Each structure stands twice: as structure tokens, then as C-alpha cells.
Length: 353
Ligand SMILES: Nc1ncnc2c1ncn2[C@@H]1O[C@H](COP(=O)(O)OP(=O)(O)OP(=O)(O)O)[C@@H](O)[C@H]1O
Ligand SMILES: [Mg+2]
Image 1: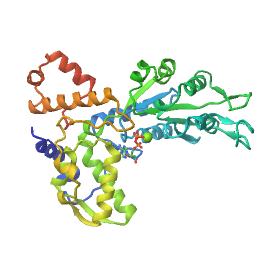
Image 2: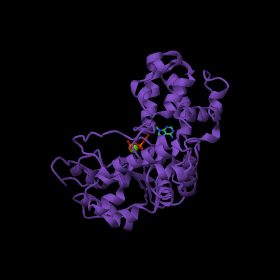
Image 3: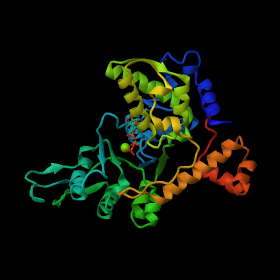
Image 4: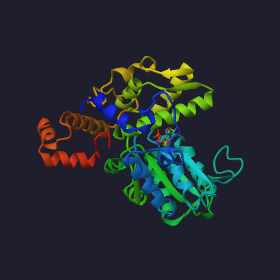
């Protein structure tokens, strides 16, 4: 099935756009989970897991590419737990300079360092009774990893410069866009902390692995952007939606959300058509293997780039052969079992699944 045909099939199965692609309809409640849109099997699996684990106190490690909704899911877990009336405190461990992060997490006593004119409670204390969300935990320094491990194991810590041990009752949710297991192998992340965090892993699928959610997300964000910006966009043409379904969305839902908002604000009213879409949507073949990737000053993760490359080639071969695995394996010069193993590992499904 060609990519256009795939897009069309998804649209036909999406009751939102079948009868009148220009009319926005309210999304069905069963497709929502506290404002998290996800009707695909993969997202329904995520919702089922969230429901199962929300009410226990086990540590959860949320992984997934940038923009897949890790922050959103962390909050949903808290909101569905018995701790919902207590604080949900979020801290981005990658965005705070290392020397400040310790005092942000654990607080400090007066005079602990130059400028500490008063004592200050840290995020762990502020979250007492509730949930702390340690975002981008993979970016934390080894020294701090030891201290976080202690809170996980004993539920206690000392403020910076303090000697009093503080006990807290906090549920920990951590998130990272890194492959933590690889960071452990490279010696960048402590294995004891990794295993302590890896109690309940929750992986959020990338948007290109659940394309059937795209029409729902587009509709949801169109409606929201109209409301927030006082615009009257009536809908999106079938052809434009097909291009959105085919696109690879490297920035996942965040990229889609921002694009829809931009289209709504700039166009203002009427229907969004192919002419309104940015060039990258019109030129991309979503199953094409990514081309040469530029290494930025921040560097790139070779392993994840290679994984993405492998996934794209496997998907391309499966689409070419209508998911007949024997034929796809032949195209890739693999034996069938190896291919099946890789499909499982990458959790690949036909894109109308
Ligand atoms: N399934 C979804 N339904 C509705 N909105 C979503 C969904 N997933 C993500 N979003 C929205 O997309 C944006 C990005 O989500 P979020 O910040 O949770 O991603 P993230 O995985 O934490 O990204 P990063 O790794 O860059 O921090 C947010 O505005 C969020 O509200
Ligand atoms: Mg985030």
C-alpha cells in the first residue's frame, strides 16, 4: 500500500473526517485520558498501564522521544493517584546548573554557601505527601545520582549545609529521552540508581509509530487553537491531512501542536489546505530512511540515530511488501526470524493499527 493509500485508509477509519472533512466534531470521550489524546492501540496500552500503576507508590520511569508527552503522562499518573490532592512538583534536572540542582532538590540551610541568606526548602520537601517528577534524570551528575538514590532507598536526606535528616513521603516519577541502559553501560549513569528507577518502565511511542492518532490530535489542537486565539478555522482538507499523516514528526506531538497553532493563527478562518502547509510536509516520504544527520555542537546519540535508521528501513520494506514478512526479510537480506525479532523489539505495527 502506498503512503497516500495508507493515509487515506487511516482517514476512512477515523469517523471524524469521513462525513465532512471541514466540520470539526467533538472528540469521543473514550479517546481521552485527562487531555491526553490517544486512540491507537499503543496509546491505549499506555493508558491501561497508567491506570494500573497510578494508585501504587512504585517508582515509574517514563521514556520516549522528545515531545511524546512524558510530562503530560507524569501529571496524569499523579492526578489518577490517591496523592492527587497533594503537590505535584516537577523539576527539570537537565535545565538547572549542577551546583544549584542539589539545593533545588534538597533545600539548604542559611549560610550553606555564598548568597544563602535564608534557609530554603527543596523540591523533595515541597512534594511531601505528593509526587515529585524528576524530568530529564539522565542529565543528572553522578554525585547527585548518589543522593537521589539515598532518598529512593531510605526516604530521607539532608539539606545542603545541614546536618538534620529530613524524612519525606514522596512518590517518584522520572523521565528521560536518553537510553538509560546505554548510559549505564557507558558509565554515565549509576546502575544501582537505574535499577531503583526501572521498577515500572513506561515507554511512550513516537508519533510516527501511531499514525492513526494524527487526525484526532489535529482535530483536538485545531479546536483548542481556535478557542485560545479567537480564530474560526473550520477544518482541514483531506489532502492536507494525508500529508500530516505521512510526515515523520521528529518533534512528535509537540511539533504537531505547534504547527497546528501556527496554521490556525496565520490563516484565521476557512479551511487549511495543502498550500498552507510548510515545505517539509509536502516533500517528505515518511518511510524513507533518514538521510545524513548533521552532528550539532551538542553531539548526537549514535545508538539512537542508528536505531531510527534501522526502524525506517524495516518499515519501508514492510510497506513495500504489504507486511509479508518473508518478502520483507528477503529485501533486507535478513532471515525471517531476525526480522520478526526486530519488529518486536521496535514494536512496529502496520500504521493503520
Ligand atoms: N497525547 C497527547 N495529547 C495531547 N497533547 C499532547 C499529547 N502528547 C503531548 N502533548 C502535548 O505536546 C507537548 C509536549 O508534551 P510533553 O512536554 O509532555 O513532552 P515530553 O515527552 O515531556 O517532551 P521533552 O522530552 O521534550 O520534555 C505538550 O504541550 C503536551 O501538552
Ligand atoms: Mg518533558
